[in-house]
Each structure stands twice: as C-alpha cells, then as structure tokens.
Length: 137
Length: 99
View 1 (cartoon, chains in turn red, cyan):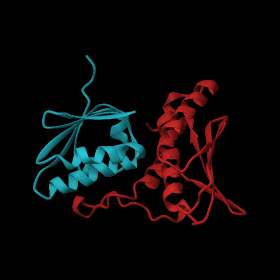
View 2 (cartoon, each protein chain N blue to C red; view 1 turned 60 degrees about the vertical axis):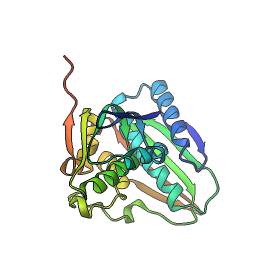
View 3 (cartoon, chains in turn brown, cyan; view 1 turned 180 degrees about the vertical axis):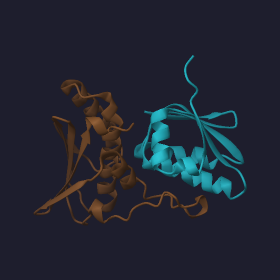
C-alpha cells in the first residue's frame, strides 16, 4: 500500500484510516496498531518539522511481512535528518529540568527498536519493522 | 477524533491525542489552575505531542505547588506513560477493572 501525504498534521487522520484498512485486509493483529500508529506519526511529524523547506509529498508505504509489518516513509530531503543522530531523551530528569520536546524518537525506539535510514540521490527513506511478538501496547 | 471537555476539577479526554490535536488541546490545559485531574478513561491513543501538552501544563502547575493527576488510565496508555518516564513525574491512577 502506498499513500502520498501532504506536509500537514491533518494527514495523520488519513494515515490512521489507511493503517486500519491495511490491517483489516491483511489480517494483521490489533496488538500492533498502537505501535505502527505512534512510530509512523512521530517519523512523519519529524519529517514535516525538520525538513520544513521541502514542498513535495511524503510517501508512506505499508508492507505485511512474515513476522509483522514493515513501514517506510520517503521524503525529498533538503535538511538532512537521521534519527540515529538524535540525542537520546533522558527520561529520568526531574520535572523542573525536563524538556517538553524530544520524546518522539525515544518512544519510537522503545516500541520498534531501530529506525533504518537510507539515502538515495536526494531521497531519504526511514523504515521500521513492527514485529508481532514485540508489540508492547 | 479527539475531544476534550471540562470535568469536575479538571478535564476529560477522549479519542486520539495526536500531533494534530495538540494545538487545540493546549488552551484547555492553560486554563487549569491548582491541582487538576485529567480523566483518561476514554483516551485511546497519545503520542509525544499529547505528552508534551500534559508535561507543559504539569510543570506550570507544579511551580505553584500543585499539578496534574492522571486518572482512569488504561493499560496501553499507562505503558506509554511508563516508557516516557511520566509515571515518575505524575500521579497516575489506573482504570479500575470492569466488574
């Protein structure tokens, strides 16, 4: 399944609708839904915010695989962003010192482990695998 | 779809608290004062954007000695709060088991 997304937060609703339809069609377990929704939203929002000079649509792809679902987000990159280079969130920081942002990639790593980053020409694809046995929520 | 409504002593959340919903939720949290309860019984989903709104309000209220109390929290939302370290920052009250 391939979906072209405008660079707007309102597209999250369309992402969730597409995910629901794909899960139903491929009989994927509901236990993976939260993980896929959250990781997809966090990466999509990062692309919009960090690569904010880009105007082209972001391409979202779902692919059912033996042990779960593979999700890919592809963007024409003007401002390079690699999730692996992002500083880890310190979740043990006391309230008064705790930053309001920076949790998104931390949650993605908690739920899906690594996010793979592939650059080809001026395109960057971020991908992750949500595994049936690793669904936490 | 996300809905937020005033409840006795706080707010009631339902639906999906995602990045698209965060901006509209923020004024409701900014209007809170003192100790407030956030009822999450009907909350299906929260992402880092929703967590950010909770944290910002909690920090503001905690500066005057109060804060947010998260109540009727379902197990999957509780897990996200735990992964975020929010269970160390907020009082989190789980949803009671159905009878």
